[in-house]
Image 1: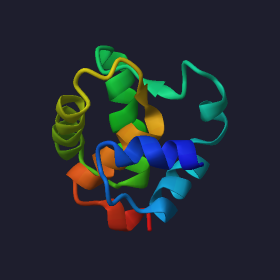
Image 2 (image 1 turned 90 degrees about the vertical axis):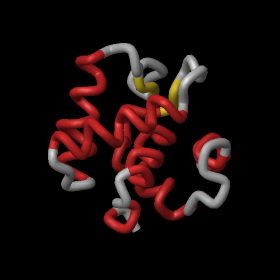
Image 3 (image 1 turned 120 degrees about the vertical axis):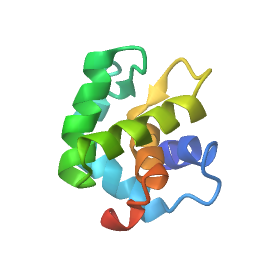
Image 4 (image 1 turned 45 degrees about the horizontal axis):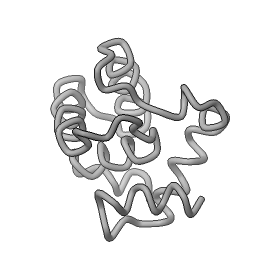
Length: 103
């Protein structure tokens, strides 16, 4: 858990540990596999899954709002080759003003 929080704090120094924990629980078994624990920002299908999965189901975002948030996160994490799914999701919630839905 602390590894996820530390990674999120690289981009959001005041990250809420309880929210990070909820994202870890949401991701569940996907975090056990190296490939599924990462988000590939260069893969359109992967970003569509983020939009149609986490952004829609958990954050209740409309597709356009989700895509705008995803673009912000991709820009913020630019230069990071292996983007942690937990960090990506946290930053997406932060960028779209929906962190409260995870609290």
